[in-house]
Image (cartoon, rainbow, N blue to C red; front, side, top):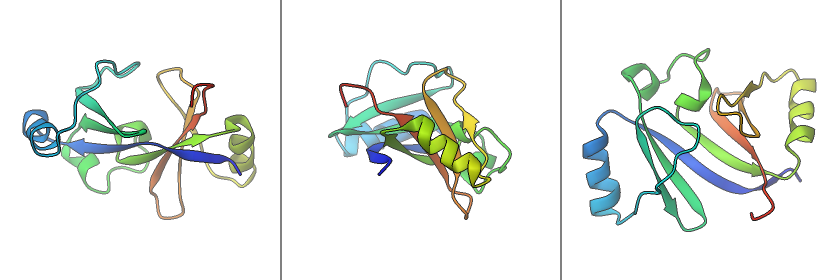
Length: 127
């Protein structure tokens, strides 16, 4: 089994201040201080052992978006993967296109048959 668990869910938002009022004020989440490799506006929250990532993006990404657009800037679920290289080879062999993270982290993105984006993140020792 390749999947070790859910790492995070990314949510696209239009107005970060309004969204923060909801996530922090209503849900009581506290922002993480770091967002490595992410220059776009947003905030990350730790929610138990998982995270919620808010990303400020344009209207196109808030809807179905452009399937050719960089998937890391679209709504997605990120999964911890025990053998990222093995799973990447398996997906590529099945003809499923992969996009590597722009951050340089051990991350690839793919889409399921309905176009939903998944971020596949290599498990680190502390996870």
